[in-house]
Length: 67
Image 1 (cartoon, rainbow, N blue to C red):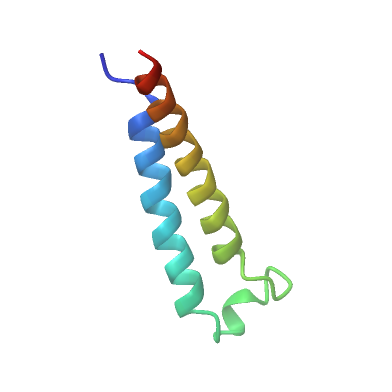
Image 2: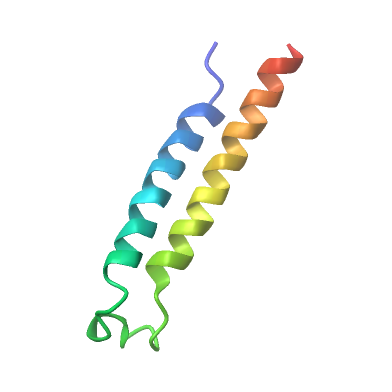
């Protein structure tokens, strides 16, 4: 039986890495971030998604290790 945390963790981790990389690539584009008051939301949300994905994978790994 597949634990649902594994695909969720993989999806959020991969998307988090991609969005974070996109945020670092476009960090010099100030016109892009004028609507968000100059805050690079791509980096922030990418890191949040990466942390959430890694947490899901860690919880799935710990559950599998116990069983």
